[in-house]
Length: 320
Image 1 (tube, rainbow, N blue to C red):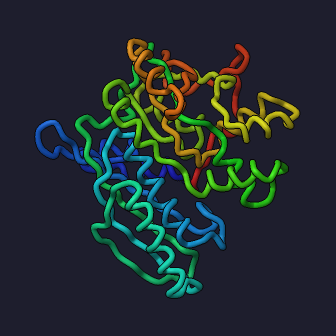
Image 2 (cartoon, rainbow, N blue to C red):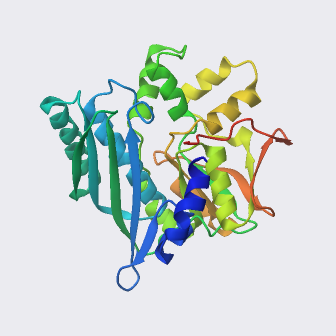
């Protein structure tokens, strides 16, 4: 029973209506006229979401940022968060203080504050979870994509996956590229600057954490539509382009980048009438926005490369 089956079979029957069947990555509560409270939760585990030996302050900052990414995808402004930490035996006072400093640094950067939580000890790996809260005039769900909409993604795809390989010293690239990729993996950038665009124009949205192909498939299934993803349109950073240049098969390499995960970009759908707003919002030096496909009939993602359908061997990350 993998992550998605366990959610659907074990926990969805327990959900309140505000949890929307646990098909989204947030819950939505009315909070006064024209305002919704958006609640999301994510955890990090040593050896799964970050490597053993990662600086505690970087662990804390990644933990906050992956939750802020979920709020950004809902067009929500961050407010506060609850924190639960299971300290491993190897983390003494110095490591715990460094973790707290990392939280403080990103609290100041993103305008969010701690509301409470819990701390425990564990004989296992370091584990921490955040429940983040934010407000939105109109929260964007996964469920609103409509046939004829365009599929757009922010930033660049594949750097998170390449960054993990760089951190594990398994990537043959120049030193500057390696350092940039490692930072991209360790410190994702939550796209909070896109909130207004999403609120005004997005019909559905989610952040790209499991892999672009897998997450677009989530969007398609929850919305009850098909989505065509044009693999050759995948936006890539200079680091990913350098890696791609050394790959023997471009289609397979693009598929790997689009299924790797840990990018924390935002994929969203928009009516074609909103394309001008998307184009304007993505002009330099702002966050790039790229049209990479369209919504069509069906109930899943259809990956296309050079005019032909592909069947990816792997679409993204799945927890057991």
